[in-house]
Length: 459
Picture 1 (cartoon, helix red, strand yellow):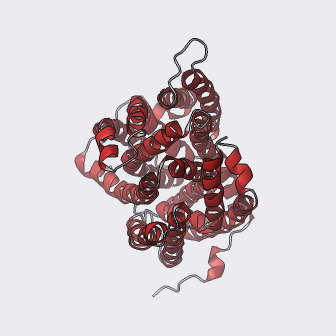
Picture 2 (cartoon, rainbow, N blue to C red):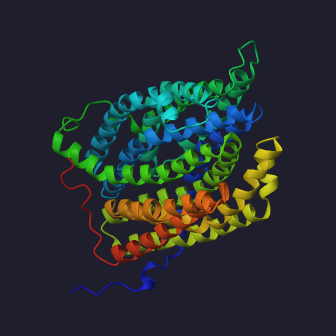
Picture 3 (cartoon, rainbow, N blue to C red):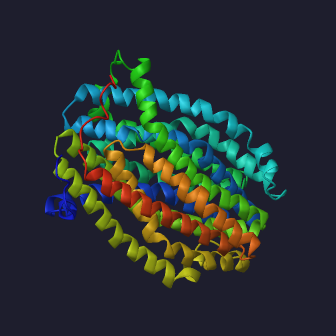
């Protein structure tokens, strides 16, 4: 029986730290750019009134609830392309990209139905009557951007896997400028356009998503063109396509369950009124913005671990995983300090209504308290994804969020009467439980053999 590597095997050297930071920084910038679109939407719609802001909150929760499983399916491209790139298997890169694009179209069509039914769903969930029609209209406008939303994810995951992220960075920067301008025109009725409020913000988002997809395609055509020009004969083979779905489905369920837990808290906030929901949205957006730092580290870990496995270098895979955990701890300590020190100032950036700002200012320090465990759970998930370990993280997500954290949220929020802050303390407990379970899984999995098995049988 082979001797298991000690803790020292996870200690990164200079090259691992350098490669991790070099990839994680631009990926984190991309993720922050994506989330900043939501921050801009929230800040600009928040200048209208609480109902419009609550509608954007509810609409975004529903959008991510219906689309996040598909995002997870496409995240299967991380280990597939990264391991193929490490092994210099260009045929596998080609077929993986093309399968991802086929899946993106199927997913865009599939989510249209639940998005179209947003109004009845919001009513069924007993959301405020004045919020439901506005939230449904906002959600319906997002349908127009579904295919480019998924198509952009395909190119983003592929470019990250091959270490070419500058086209994504430029695309996000330009898309954010466009989003601010389109929001200014369509929310407030500038340049002769009608003042559409939250609905205008939805149209601005859809326009930005089409721009993102077409822009990244134009910028990367010289690199990805050879993989796209001819349809690979194995793209639609049932068994390999099904294997890719089986690899991505646990990631999709994992993301769905995590977003679902936050979404359930958002629905519960709606029971407390539009003001509570609006304050919750401000705190969620700030937490999500900070969360993009460990998401960038997580995706960098998935890519670097996957490449190392493809190269047959398990020692480097372990060091990259360990380095990701260390960098995450350092980064999230800083964001936690900011949230704990400046809750009122951060809330004031998003609303001029004192009641909404007061709710947000109470929730932001709670977000600061769970920064570290939130970062650790996503970084461990990324490192495990690099070795195509996707099922256990999904199970741990169910245990931590749904069987532990969510019941605590509802108990604190309603039974104990703690209100919005009680709901958030339950989330913190769930995140802590998931982080502990995933750290243990990463320790166990990475001390065993790390072989290139994710690509076997994928065509």
